Length: 137
Image (tube, rainbow, N blue to C red):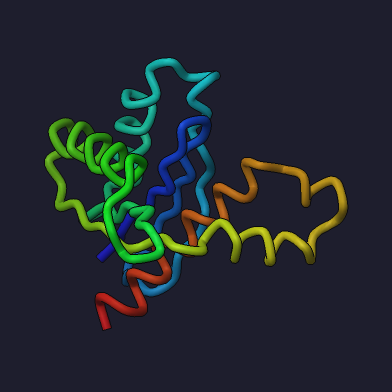
């Protein structure tokens, strides 16, 4: 079962998909909201092309696992996507995925370490892989 992972951000939306068996996540890129004012249309197009069985959104919760302003924004965004693509939507706590992505980027060349879009792509993979490993198995 192919899945899609989304790392929602106010500037960029990181996107990852799993293999057809739903075991391994890989990045397929980002949607830059500044470059794509109709970013929901752009993401909907990518979802249609990839044809996942479900979409997993990273949910930024507080340190006490409480909802935040950003987590409510993610839920609203997920609802807008769900209405367009009619696929099951799942959420997983994305706590520390940005930190983990930054740690992974430390092994890259210096120029690549400053690439914010790379961080968003890695974060979307971490979100999806976390869901695969802890929610499906």
